[in-house]
Amino acid sequence: MDTIAACSGGALPAAIGIVRLSGPDAGPIIEKIFSSKDENPITKKKTYHLYYGKLLSQSGKTLDLCLAAFYRAPHSYTGEDMAEIFCHGSPAVVEGALRHAYALGARPAGPGEFTRRAFLNGKLGLVEAEAVADMLDAQTEQEALNAAAQLDGAIGTPLRALRGELTGLCAHFYAVCDYPDEDIDPFEYSRASETLLRAGQQLRALCAGFERGSLLKSGFPVAVVGLPNAGKSSLFNALAGSDRAIVTSEAGTTRDVLEQPVALAGGRVLLLDTAGIRTPEGEAERIGVERALQAAQRARAALWVFDGSQPLSGDPEALPEALRGKPCAAVVSKNDLPPAFDPSELEDRFDAVFSLSSKTGEGLDALCSWLSGLIPPAGEVLVTSPRQAALLRRALDSVDAALASAQAGMTADAFLLDVEQAVRFLGEVTGEDVSQDVVKDIFSRFCVGK
Ligand SMILES: Nc1nc2c(ncn2[C@@H]2O[C@H](COP(=O)(O)OP(=O)(O)O)[C@@H](O)[C@H]2O)c(=O)[nH]1
Ligand SMILES: [Mg+2]
Image: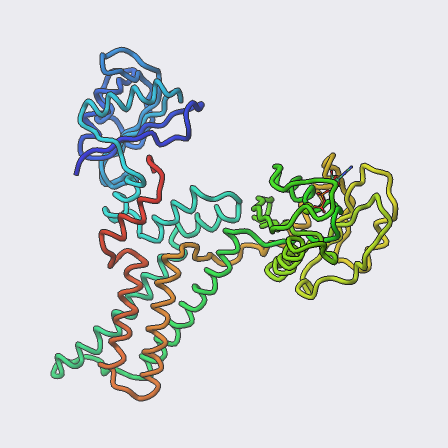
């Protein structure tokens, strides 16, 4: 194994820059780059402790005053000797430190290489390693909580146990067949069926969790609907915090459905801005209205926008069929203009009524809290990786097939082939039975320095 180095902090310049080293030469290299205040080599000091000292350039000059830590294998993130330098986060300092490390034999780390080494050294399971990527991608607290639980083994540990149980089932049967004279408990078909039934339930719950997890990732879809010129696109932009949608005083401006994830306190919503629903003028608008209705279908909730500066028009009860039964709030917009009706008139027809201005931002907070409340609260830990979900589904199919055969009275050697398949799929999820190519592919999607 060679020694790798990278900047593990964020984009530079930053308040603090983090330079990381991992590999057999991490010790000798950190001793040359960092000189602690008492001049004793850091590798002879207590591991896992921070020391103050000088960061040295290649020419031996003091490049910065910094903190550094040395972690002795196997008690480090990667399981190898590691060092970390916490210096000032200027590009010159961080790059100077890295240049010095490279001159001393380290090489630049590839994407996710620290975590890949942690996985290969058995410090992390593959599910846990993928959770690290989720953690870095997390944009809402809910996502971070889910990633933290995964990192802590909430998915990986039960899966490893399940794989062990299924492996045990196969091993038991073959032991009974291969050593008929030994004193081994007989293979009981009813117990095998029970194990498979439980395995199926567990896998089914994980697969269903992934479906909900996708919603967590893409956002809870909320359609913004209403008559043309009501202020839908303006509201969409105000919630999105950017001018994504075109806003004009011309009716029928929006035709395509625009999507924008918006992070709120409780999680993420996916806003869908739509064309005003009215009898269309022309082909493009006709398609726009059609798409608006499709978006309503996809949405789990809706904001029905009314222009508060105009008398109520249209029939607010004429909700598109696709929105029936879904939470729907009335948004009376343009409250910076003189009101033309009392918003409370809408109260009995909607789950909530908000009076706001997309122009001044007044009243937006209350709407955001309502939207936050729609997002299902984080309950159990969800599978979020499409890779894991696809393998879990295949494992489930194999377990279901085995169970069906067992219940149909087939002999164990026939249905255990399906169980062995399931074991292989689970091994690919947990990383206990996975090819190097797959591992490479997974970590190539990480960022450098992680
Ligand atoms: N004064 C005021 N004008 C607004 C507000 N929201 C939208 N408008 C105006 O209303 C018109 C239609 O807005 P738009 O967002 O395109 O409506 P849409 O057709 O429902 O998407 C534009 O001229 C906007 O500038 C608001 O909160 N206050
Ligand atoms: Mg619009």
